[in-house]
Image 1: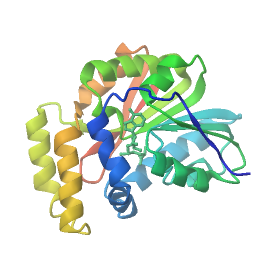
Image 2: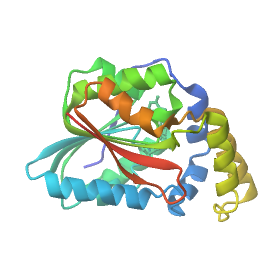
Image 3: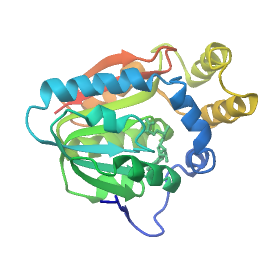
Length: 244
Ligand SMILES: C[S@@+](CC[C@H](N)C(=O)[O-])C[C@H]1O[C@@H](n2cnc3c(N)ncnc32)[C@H](O)[C@@H]1O
């Protein structure tokens, strides 16, 4: 059966409109990063898969915040006991692709077009596992804190976030300088214009927290445990696990 996409709310305000532009206008450029695995998605998702296999012995529900086009997610959920999947995203082209990828999945699928902040704060529903890949860093620090507290209220077991992280002694300009220095040559599979688009987006729209602060925000939000599981090959993003 075809997967439908439902609207969270017509005319809802968007918290990070600038950050969203690249995903509405330049989704193909982002897909190039995924295809080239420049953000180490394969490794991050394989760690998520291992956790779901090792710890998800019973049917579980899974909330994917900012699910994008669900790149790699069908494989990540395969052979697990997932019973219900919900994805939320603001990008219509991404959700259209997500719906096609999830068609025929052997679990209940629910795709929502809307703002993740509003989606999580509006609803009382809880999920066993909450996953958020490469989105929270667009929010201001206070909004990230508020979001992680709201996510905690919706999480029954574990939340995992995959986010750009500054070293503990790095401010934002130093992180961006390191990003430009270390990635311009390594991401050489991109065309010059793809590199310009992506690097401009990161420099203008990304607000990575310090490693210690990502973990502290999870604990301040009410999680009992916070742990870093993995850092991407180019030391750009880290995978954090928060347990209730
Ligand atoms: C870098 S992509 C990550 C997609 C996917 N999670 C991944 O790891 O590949 C960021 C995603 O966040 C979505 N997004 C950004 N801000 C959002 C918001 N406030 N609410 C919902 N989705 C948002 C974008 O549309 C995009 O799909």
